[in-house]
Image (cartoon, rainbow, N blue to C red; front, top):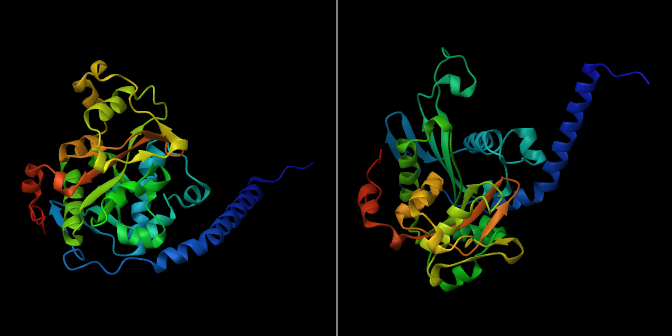
Length: 322
């Protein structure tokens, strides 16, 4: 049998990839169309423009589909290229981290208006253009309920939590990531400023969502998991339990076997930030093999936020306001 030339092989591969992509797009078209029709109303006054600035960095909500795609590309770069996540076919072909929730969420962006071109594969002398260097995905309860639920519900049974607080407005936070050279105080500060501005404008009462520890072996994560279980458990009224068929116990170590200082050092910066704000954590963890992580549920009622952080950002989110 004669071998095909590299050109023919490449062409066949390209055609196959194109057909797979079209098939995936058609398969999800109905869901995505329904999600698009449930898109939140235009942002209220105070959320339509720049939410805050520090130097060349700006924080605001994505305004166009193109900007949402930029957030997805950043997520792909961090989750799949830098970390251990395994992309599905759609994400691999498009080089973007994509799921249906993107269409019903608001996307918070940190944009560097003087980003070095070399960080994005361009020559150093290339003209500097604004680049998305940090992002957070925000899903309000009213939108989630119209769409069919929160992202976190695939891992945690949050229905009892919501039922215990029928008059509260819940906001799910997720898909947080920052480009490696920007993982500093300024970028994180702007992300939190943006979240706090959003919370105040929409009058949200509770923030929650999945937070991740890198790795899928709970035994190797015994110290951070046990620390969160013993030292930061959610009170009964704010507790949610991991879904039973995916639940991994967090109390791997006894409370007396934990070195708190070492445990804090083992936590990722995002979880340490949540702890400083006053967050607590759900009952049980969930291994997410696609993302190569072990997830815990963060719950942060606005009423539990440390007063010094409210003073820092301003009761009405004025600290970094543009």
